Length: 157
Image (cartoon, rainbow, N blue to C red; front, side, top):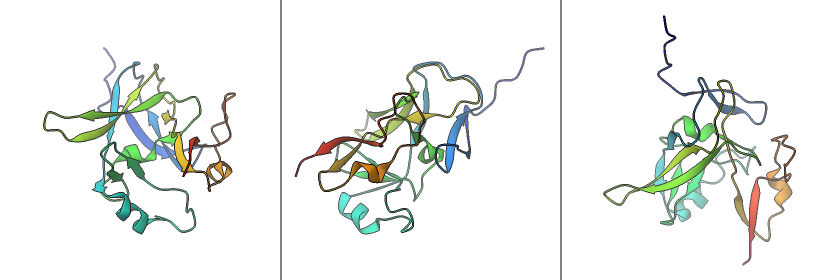
């Protein structure tokens, strides 16, 4: 008798890195599409008006920027993808894809094989302006390659 393949590749549960996290419930091959990042599409102006989602955690949002200038706000209409945490050595990446009708989406794909039980991570590479201190976005990934912040590039004004 062969083992049944789980219907879902992932599940959300408590994370040792931050709050909730997304975990593989079965092995996931490198290059596999795992989940789309969903939520309400809004303008940056609307995102700024909504910020912060939680005043107790002002640097934590469920926003994902699209090349169109829109923002996906996963607090509203989002799915499990919003719980994927940051790591400096991620096992997934976010890919912006265009559908046949021109709609952009964010898809999370594995960049290496993920074992059952492993937490899924992307490198947030947050772009912050020079007035912000990268230490405000402290990283807790624990990687030997940890840069200490979820920030990536520093944007000049």
